[in-house]
Length: 124
Image 1 (tube, rainbow, N blue to C red):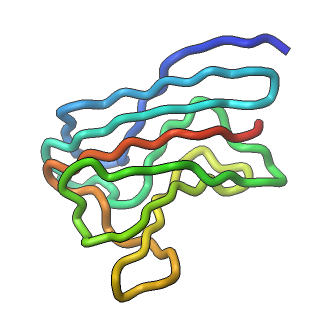
Image 2 (image 1 turned 90 degrees about the vertical axis):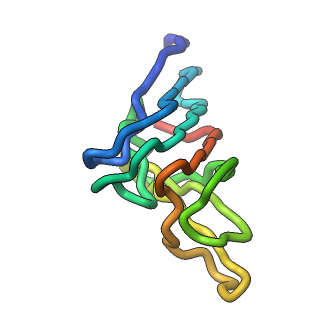
Image 3 (image 1 turned 45 degrees about the vertical axis):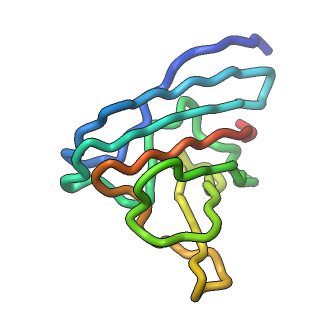
């Protein structure tokens, strides 16, 4: 299978505006390695937890977990963060914990001035 690199456009799916909006990927056989950096200017009607626009949909039988980090201004006071791609999915759901929550749930992450970086790999 061919190997190649490219860009993708991460989106929160509303009328949000961005200060920084970068998505990169490398495809090696059936593995996609992604990296993205979003800095929100104004959240508007954008999602606070879901990033769409992945360059390829995930494998239909297995999902993936990605590394995710809030670098600035999370909408919630979180203690841990991860990105999840569902089987056959083409978006990243951010799930997190807080001091009061041991389980990962969809706490609001994106808001005005929030910066999130996500990286990892998934299968197609």
